[in-house]
Image (cartoon, rainbow, N blue to C red):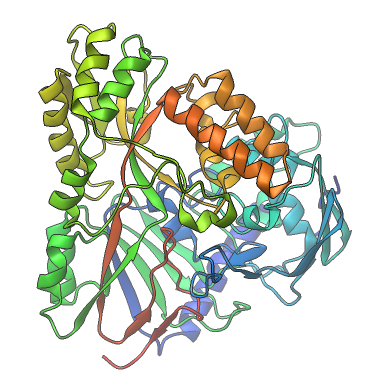
Length: 535
């Protein structure tokens, strides 16, 4: 592993320079309008390694870039992901286990330093992302196959893997792969000091002072109120369209809609179907909708004394009438996937997998055979985090009651509260971050996932974990698909979660704004996807 030993600067200089550049960038952009985006919840931090939730990624997607980018506007003919150059201009396998990337020249970090191989090494260091004791454990789920990341020259990086990875390009275009700039991060490095100690200091200092290469740089954060970004006019992809972008916390749907109509907001996110028709009546507002590569799910704590009974978990899943939920909440405009997969998986998609069924008679039978004695089961959720979160919970509570399951809805404030001791059932969502099981079900539920390693909420069966290990090692397409089919069967038998549906997200957008939402929760304000015309 080659590490950066140059271009170091004191933290105060680095952060001060970054903020000065942001201010300068804003000054240059005076003729451009400011944009305000009303969101249901602000990011929990702007550290791309710490949080990868829906509310986080949509904000820091404009601050950071990836080596390889997914072009959502131009998918492949089979629905698969189309990958294009990002911070890397080109890439190739030089041997079955070595992957080389040629970096784009002329890229500038928000602190004014040039982007080069040192920044890639800082991002993908084993201590930070993929080693056995990586500071960000989720990084191992994506990059645990790495054995070395080295600098061949200032603009060439080589990644060596333990075994050939057929989807490494997809991994480098997705979550956990956002490139940080090395000087602010390595300013905390001290010789002889354990990496976790100095990385704790770095993460704490940079959580709300991020330094990336994206089209917008960080300006300000006010807790429970707003995050403000400024145009970074030295962005390699062109001059950003807005002077600033302010993400404003507006938890209530009605308030987001009212503010949009009144002109207080330029874009409002997470607008449910019951608002779409009304908004279409306003001449200066358009409604943009996009089915998401994301499933709303209920997670079961398989290690809980009550929920450890698999028959109970199956009964709870079989009691849910998903079509009724979709018709009532989503006006029938979405669907439930047939298992933890999407057609965009292409050749890996298991079309004949049955997925999650509705069968209340079988649910009652399994419940009678289980050890369940009518205990009250906690169903935790964060109000306003997911669209129709509360409404779905209330309907499901009644569905369970109809078969003899007694559930209590518990409202909490964060996922830390959701997963604290005593967790039994809780609302979550699963994003298909890469159109392949290695970047979807294995990322969230596999042997190296937080569900198994950190949170310890999923005591997976050998059948699931063995299939997961085989899938990770296999490179033959037909064999991978057969292994994936076996993994899906094992996962659905384990029943650590049940699927509800894939939401369709709605955005209200003011006239004159040219912007396209994606099937992921990214909000892309790069010049290629965002422009401002006459209002």
